[in-house]
Image (cartoon, rainbow, N blue to C red):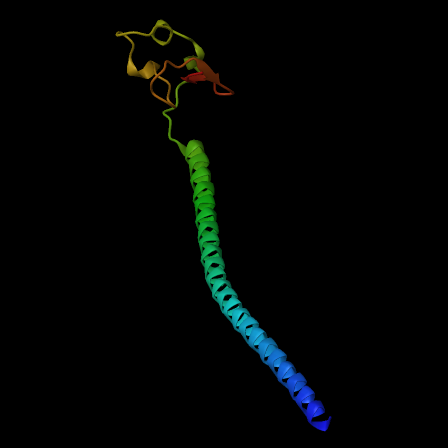
Length: 138
């Protein structure tokens, strides 16, 4: 009877040992899979961090370019408005408000004095006040 009890206990111990070995093997495989997954995630995180840094650098570069272009545009607009105010136009007398035949005709006989002083292409038809110079086109 004691011998039978010893064998029964030994079989139980062998089965328990096999079960524990199987569970240990499963847990080791699971830990290995999780280690690989962790390594993959770390690699992906590093790659995404690099991409984020590259996009941030590009955004800063584009923002700097936009600021530079905006400043250049403001400078050019200010310069253009100052130039408009300071353009030296030969002054005409107050009698220039009289529209003579030269200013009313367009064609091959038109003199260059009849042209718009702004664009120099179309005939002058707008009178400036208060000086009453007829020197701009519509």
